[in-house]
Length: 323
Length: 283
Image 1 (cartoon, rainbow over the protein chains, first blue to last red):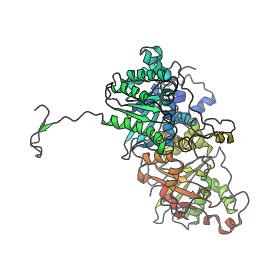
Image 2: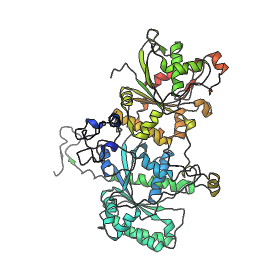
Image 3: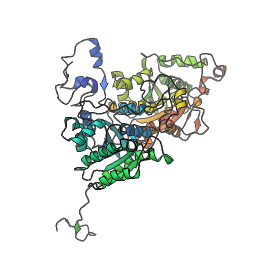
Image 4: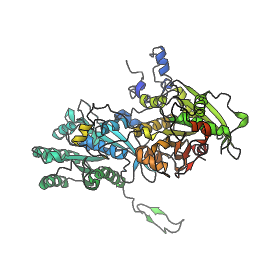
């Protein structure tokens, strides 16, 4: 085996293409080690292929380079403890887009992680045997980086935005709420440091069942961690599995904890894979994303007021900031 | 690139109807009875590409499948009614190659060449062979009876057709070096909904509406990425009715060029298949 590229940022040119110079033909790259290539016929044929720089699977950190070279994506941190419905939410979002739904004024214009999306959406699709399973538990191996799913959207004016969603195992958040410096919390910490907006999942099923006490504690403590240094980043609270009713005081206890936090942008969304009255639960999935986009677009500094001398006169409309 | 050469790349998976379309289009061009005509001084010397389909259609039979290894292309010099010359290049290959591009995520030298040369893309989509996606959004959660009824082995993950076509177009765009930031004006994209006759649609159905109903993700992807003037969505029925391996007497008597039609962007039926060339090259 061995890496065929001498550059650190290019882990596997044979499978994911050239990551440094962007050659679509590997043998054109000066860092690609051609000598090691055995001179058998099969390898020769391989060299005649042109590759694309994305695998279609969920992104890792290295893959982000390809995207961030051309635009600044909006990274949305999908957070919450295990089995709160984070992956199901993402799968439902993709299913909605696949059925032609829009996110506010934005509609689908591409994705570099189509296989990743299709894989999670598969669980929510009717199979020949009519079976629907919820996505399996997102495994928490020693990873420090969440899986990243990409969506490109365009609005009616043709303006493009790139969205990145984190698909992380809930255990990370559990470790993180207990100890931010825990080895197992590094992924959650990455999400907290790098995301432009957050969606925190409150599982209505768990909040109405026997373990509701523990669920409340978990949600509140993850919320406390996220709201630290949040500044003006949007924070959406997603009541997942909202087809299950929860006690009003449970809801209030969670909300009152959040109301005490220094949140600039806060909103609640009730979602479920059941469509709810007039499809409201599904609509809320799209709306929560649009809300994040809208708030982030408004998060720009106000233009300073500039005094102007004779503004109507082109030659005398001298402008000064501290005049 | 020389602007006078319009190089059309027909892209379509197995059984999408490329070969029948090519045969019927050539038949009409060659008859010189329609809007676009073949230049009589420049008839292609090698017609092997259309040999099988022309022979079969003249006997009222369906054409065979293009061999997986076949890679030939034909250049047709054609005139429009004002005498302007268009060079229409028609590569012939087995549809499996297109499937392989998406499955293997790489493109061979031959396809790189097709893509580089092309100035218009025509994507063949056969809707009657596309499974309707059933998921929790449009079907809800299946009842226990439904699960019982469909109780067979769970199938493996399969990429949806929507995602397949998008990944294909994204790959072609990347290889051609086109950025998704601005709307694309070159190459033009025409999405052809083939085998229109078997879809049993009401008269006047607009092809782009149908694409939105059946493949909304592909519809949004192309609308958002292509300039309005460079994107067309058409319906095509190359043979007008399904042919089999048994001869169809009517076909023999009326000749193949009397069969087939396309549905233009406004939903109007047009017998002259050659007019679709104008749409392909963006005129």
